[in-house]
Image (spheres, one colour):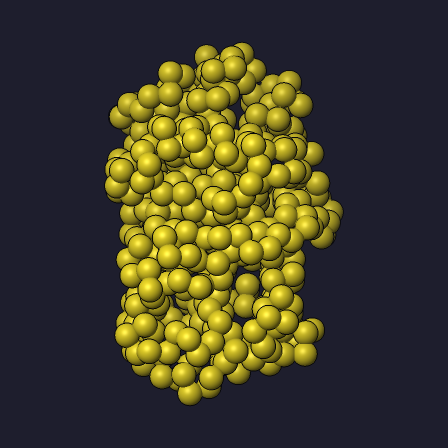
Length: 396
């Protein structure tokens, strides 16, 4: 199935089937017959592999919930909007999903800039949002958002254990290459601190615009600096282009390569030879070995096809819906305020292992170090223990 298959507006009904809706709205407010999740996700502009896989994962979780009687006695439905990776559009979509569609809870977005835009509207909307994406953690402007529940991994959960492993295995000189926005820059601040703590050195750092796919002027600089580790936080079409161009210039074997946004689907724009061996670290990888994940992958393939994309955004979206299920059970209600209160302390033991929202509206979770194989999937090399968020937010 193509990663462009999801139209701009779709609804998951209680039967698990998809139907296109108009703008008139769906039942979803407290007291109605449905509990509506409004998905505010990128489904275009090169981010289709990220947004589409989250929709598909949510479909599986919602089907399971509806098969077991729904939440608070209501069927659960999913209304999907394409935010086009644009902050203002993301904010507009949040307004529309709440005002027109009666969403009890939102899901998304993915990019940090879009998340901050939505966070700024949530207090006015009085609706919580489930943000199931890796991000920059306490450095983010909206880290202490009262209504945004940030359910992806943060630097203390992956950068702090991952960088020492890289230093031990590959060496202590790092070159940082990222896109020019908040997540790469703030993630790299954590990388720089971890490298410094490990006695290493940053020998290069540069940023490119989000739409960059020509790295011909950058690769020679990296080659000249000769780092032990090239640490990349480029997104969209950048990873495939960068890997292909390094392969063409014959320098891939000179250093270890890390790509925190080198997800499956994105990498399929490059040959397997150009991507094999790249490391990444995430709270979810397809190869996690537990019964819940085995069952989830089977359902995912049965519903969406053997070739449907699974990447590091897939598991957190499924897990977010399972945390929502626990939140409604804990609070005993499905209004936005009930959901918000229930999410504080909600927990799962599912495809990502044990997760819990302990403090700061953040999730305690472990992470997995993976390496791209010849099928452009990640083999799990090592797992890191769960880390709790910092507890810096006094008001939530």
